[in-house]
Image (cartoon, rainbow, N blue to C red; front, top):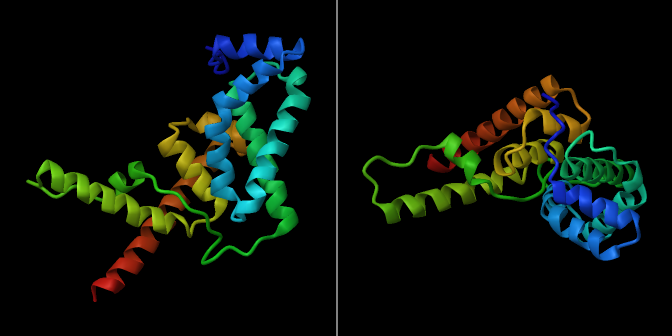
Length: 201
């Protein structure tokens, strides 16, 4: 089975319309992918005023290179790779100093569920409160992860992307993606244990 046959038929139609000069169709493509692009930009770029400029730059690159898109991956994955590489270029050029440990911010309940178990016999309201508090705690610690680690965690757990898709986006081998995710989770768990064990003393 060809792993790249996951494109939405609507995307192909929209791309063909854009190439014929339909700018409304490009606005639709932006709308279909802007959440994913925002996830990557917000995880990797710490300077708020640069994010909007980067998003515009990303979609300018998408527009300029659209004729070269050959549907060898999902369109959203292709856009995500442009976003990822554009952010990496920005980081390399600006060399920003991240607070703590190369940081950004986000919360991911999926990861919090993997690190903690809901209390036994908790009521539904207690469970919701516990899950919300846990997600907030994990989210604060995710801020301290390196941008690439955080991006991988978010795209894997929150956006449900496969190792193959992450490999296409980052340009890393699938084995490297898996090991990077392992290290990211390990770093997150160690940071949580270190901080909250200290606070419990």
